[in-house]
Length: 346
Image 1 (cartoon, rainbow, N blue to C red):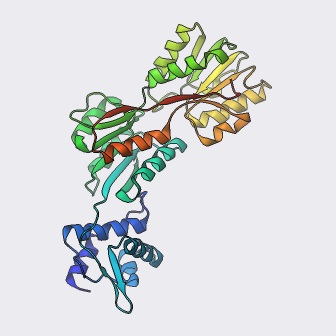
Image 2 (tube, one colour):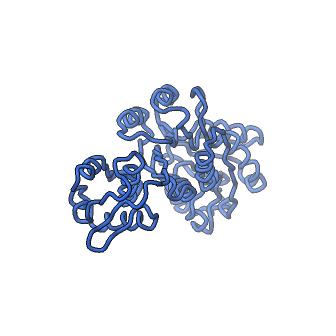
Image 3 (tube, rainbow, N blue to C red):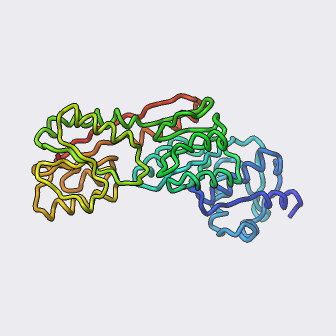
C-alpha cells in the first residue's frame, strides 16, 4: 500500500454504537477522504481483505461499502487490479448526532421518519443519555467528531435548570435542533420542533369531553422522578377544573385502587399493562365502568382490547419536520400537531 492509502486507513473510525450501518460509516470515511484530498482521483484502494483486516470488520461489510460507492460512481474497479477512486467530485454528506433521552417505540418512529426524509444525504450517529443531565454533559464533552447538526431530545429526570447552560456551552447554536420539547434561555438562533404539552393535553381532553362525561373522576398517572414535562400536569389540572371533574395525580400505580366511574390517563408506557391488568382483575369493563387514555400513539394500541384511546403528537411528522429544517438550513421554531385518537377504551 502507498503511504497515501496508509494515511487514509489511520483516519477510519467505525463505531459499534452508531445508528449508521458500518458499511455506510466506511463509505462515508472514503468520501470524506476524497473531499479533503487524502485520496484523489485514480488512487487505488485497499483490497476487500486488506481493509477487512485493518479496520477489523467483516469482508461482507467492506464489500457492501464498495458496492454502495460503486453504485454512487465514487469508485470503480478493474478486474485483477482492484478498486480505485473514480471521481473527486463527491456529494457532501452531513454528519448529524441524534441525542435521545431514552429508547422507546415512539422515538423509533421519529428516528425512522427523520432518517427516511434525509435518505443518503446524512450520516446519523445515535446516542442515548438516559435522561441524565450529567451524562449528557459528559457525552457532549467527549465526542470525537465534529457534527454539522446536534438533534437533541431535552428531557431530564433531574437538573432541568442546568440544561440551558450546558447546551449554550457545548452545542453551537447554529447546529442545534431541539426536538420534542422547547427550552427557554438558550442563546442565539437555533431550530426547534416541539410539543406544547399544557395546551396539547387540554385540547385533546376537551375534544374527548362527550365520552368523558360518563366518568366522575379523572386520574393522571404521572410517576415520581420521571422525565415527562410537568406542563402535562398543568394542562390536566386546568381541564379538570374547567369542566368540574374530580381529579387526582397518581404517582404510584401499584398502590392505586381502581374505582368504578374513573378514567385513567396513562403517561408511561410501562404503566399501561399494569393499569389494564388491575382493571381486568376487578372485573370492570374498560370503556364503560372505567376509562383508559394512553399518552403517545404506537401501532399496537389500536389493537389492544379492541383499541386504546390515545392522545399523542404526530411522531412521524416530528421527524419529517426536523429533517426539513436541516435541509432548508432553517432556524424556525415549529409546533408539532397533537391528536386525539378515540377508541372503545373511553
